[in-house]
Structure formats: structure tokens, C-alpha cells
Amino acid sequence: MPTPHPSKTPQEEALARAEQHFWDPRREWRRLSSEFLGTLLTTVVILGARAIGAQSGEITLAMGFTARGLMTLAAILFLGTISGAHLNPAVTFGFALRGNFPWQRVPGYLIAQLAGAIVAAAIIAAIFGDFVSAGATTPGKGVAAWQAVAIEVVLTAGLLSTILGTASDARNMGTNNAIAVGAYTMLAGFWAGPASGASMNPFRSFAPDLMVWNFSTTWIYFAGPLIGAAIGVGFEWILKGPPTEAGDLAAQGLGPEQDRG
Image (cartoon, rainbow, N blue to C red; front, side):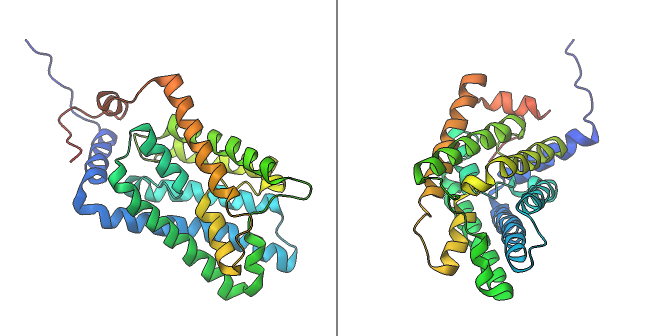
């Protein structure tokens, strides 16, 4: 006699619903809205902290990165089941390169993230004026461009390794993932913030550069994170091999009957 399948727990049922919603094409507008909102909030926090710090001196660099990490944690917790809370083109690129996220959905995510970052920078510019420039990521004093690129590569490779090791398929979601990614963001800022700005996010760096119309170092924060994301994906392949749909579903407690659409 076949062994009956035990009934799903409420947590497993919630995961199954989240899985269905994440792959349902009719809900793409919700996912893009989620990416826009999450990127806007995380960018507002880090740019706002820098602007207030420059204006009043009451917010330190470490405080700014702590705020960024905590906002990232919160965004994953309340947006992760909707869009996966990528909030970063390097993360979306990494998930797609890993084979967990369809390439045809990448442009929409990138547009939503870029729009969120630009709107965030515009808000900070409207409130604090020229102090938005304090949020720009530039190499620290005595740090050459190639060194800043190398630091961003290392930081983003670590970020992608953390995300891919704790995410559910192509989604940042759940307490463990939120704590891991938020904590890593803080840690990266604490040790590398003074050297490269610890961006790890091309759009987070591009947005304040756009406000002050200075793109002299913007390329650093595209090259470093994208190369780092690819390296992080490479580490994941070495450690775990190629992804399989059966493995993804099993890891989430889902059955093969769930269709991704």
C-alpha cells in the first residue's frame, strides 16, 4: 500500500502559496511594485543617514550602515514572499545566472529597482539639497580605483554567497535569511565602508551620482558588484552543483505538483 502523505503544516501551506504567487505571471505588477518600494526604502535610509550625518555630524558611518542593514532585514521580512526582495540588480543578476530566476523577468526587476533608487535619491535631494552628495559612493582617501573595484568584488561575492546559501529558490524570505543578509550588509559596511563605500549595489550608487550629475566613479560600482555576483554564483556551483527544480521544491517543503507557471 502506498504511504499516505502527511497533511501539510500551516508553514508548509504558506510556503506553497508564496511559491504559487511568486511564479504566477498575473501578479508580476505586484512583484515589480514590491521591488520598487523595497529599493526606495533601503536607498532612502542609507542616503538619508549620510545626508543627516554630513549636515549635523550626529550620524556616524557605522550608524548609517547599521540602519541600512536593519532596513534590509525589515524589507526581506515584509516583501520577501511577494517579489523575493532582491532590491539590487546584482542580486537579480546572480539569481538568474544561477538558474533560479528566469532571464525574461530580469528587465522588469531592474527597471523597478532603478526607479526606486532614483526616486529615493530625489526625495533626499528635495529634503537636504546638496547634502545628497554625501550619499555618493566613492573610493576612500588613498584608495585607487582598482582597489575599490576589488573590494566591491569581494564584498558582493560574499553577499551573493550569503543570499544563495539562505534564500528560498530565487527569493530572499524568512527570518534566517533576513538576519543573515541584514547582518552581512552591516558587517561589510563596518570594515569596507571607509575604503569603497561598501555599495554592493549599482543602482544605490548611480542614484546620488545622477542627482549631482557626477559619474566619474560610477563605473566602479557597476563593475565590482556584477563581477562579484558572478563569482558568488560560481562558489555556489562549486559547493552545491547545478540547481534542480526537484531540489528547490524539496528544500521548501513543496511537492512536485506545484507548477511554477
